[in-house]
Image 1 (cartoon, rainbow, N blue to C red):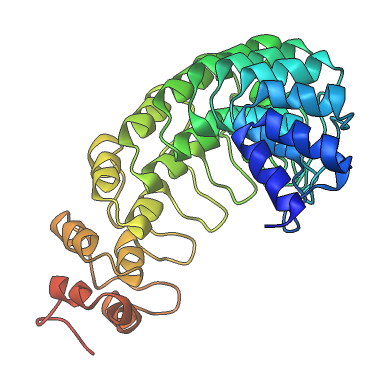
Image 2: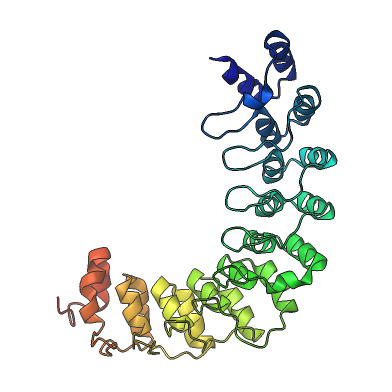
Length: 336
């Protein structure tokens, strides 16, 4: 094992005495002791592992730069925040490091902390000047990430600090409500709905609503909450002219299909702009159970889309993925 590997392994263990002896013996240039593949230094390793005393030694005795970056542009503060080491975060900020450095993809320490749902670190970063409105390459800010992870405490805290975050949109027009609904985060959805005041349907650039995301993912309770609060409508169409029932069928989600048919009174034969019916979409995706269920609910398998295709005529492609799809229609109607 070469000298550099010994140093980095000792750093991973938090073994200050071994590092001190090696430094006394060789007079180390700490900034050059990095992993080839990642560029992580001993300081990155210490921050990731939560070795506060080692961080102090490397900086105060080894004179390491606390802003040293690895090959992804990550600094020790990124690692300390991402791996939930509050004392390390506290030390780094106390030493005056930049609060909002961007790593590759434009991720800040606060964004990484929000993905780990660590209330204390998120609050500490904010109180020390971290900005929740900064965006990564996809246009997501820390609030989007908090909504994705589902920590309602962090979401409420961020909104209290900056209410305008509720109106955040990513580059493809996704709102925090889209994100929370897609990931089934009930508590967060409730927080957002209680503050929601937009009278118009919330759509992303594809025309997708939070309700569509919820039914596609099978989060029926959230779908019901969105409809009851009049935030979303079952009659809204996306950019392809699809209703929520089309997306539920396309995903093969029977519980969502039942909600839309029984509680929203959506027509089981509703056409999209290309005249595709829910039955077409379930068949095309190979969802045998959904096809059977739609037929039981009155879906008409003789209806054609704008290309003149009935459900049977699209089965050839579906059967390649899911042979059982034919069981709903065969042997009576299969034309293959």
